[in-house]
Amino acid sequence: MTDALYLEDSTETTFEATVDRVAGDRVVLDRTQFYPTGGGQPHDTGVLGADGDEWAVTGVENTDTIYHEVDGDPPAAGTSVRGEVDADRRRAHSRYHTAQHLLSAVLLAEFDAPTTGNQVYADRARLDCEHDRFSESDLEALEAAVNELVDAGHDVTWYTLDRETAEAELDPERTRLDLLPDSITEVRIVDIDNGDVDRTACAGTHVENTSEVGEFEITGRETAGSGRERIRFVLD
Image (cartoon, rainbow, N blue to C red; front, side, top):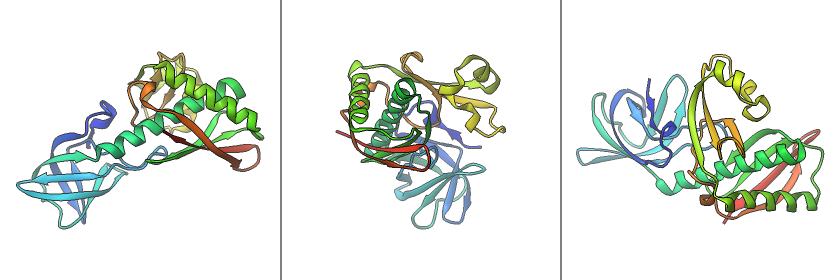
């Protein structure tokens, strides 16, 4: 099983690893900083290098383990490689994912509107929630509240708990552990300001302080189904 280094440190973008096995144009490493597609966050891209050769990493997926899709003939099993994640793409995803958590927290606290889905990109994001319809004044209030949290410079931390402890000790409305498969026995918790702002189960990458998110701007809303709203936003 690949050691997912990004779960411990979202800011590190280089690492050393060994190729465990090859599956077509995909390689499995013993450890990786490449984030796989999941949780509404796209995969990382970057390169693997060894002995003067270089392979572009064009896709990363997590099924039974983490697979790295590479251009060209992949490095053989046993090869020692140096990985380098596209740092700008990673940071953009981390900023947007943290902003999504802030928006989710405000929606739940101010509108009793739990998040039902999200998708972040490097230049925009959207969030779906349970709510009938937001007015223009609602959107203005949401935007102001999120920017207030950004400007406050709250610390963002993450840690792992066994599921039984998390279910017993954490607020189920905020952590949404019910959305995770029963097979998951350990959960990664992302915590903003020691839970005073937000605390939820999430395996994505994040910035370490809300001040790194940048200015938050809502670009629109639309209906996402009966009793559901979709909010789109960008960051400066």
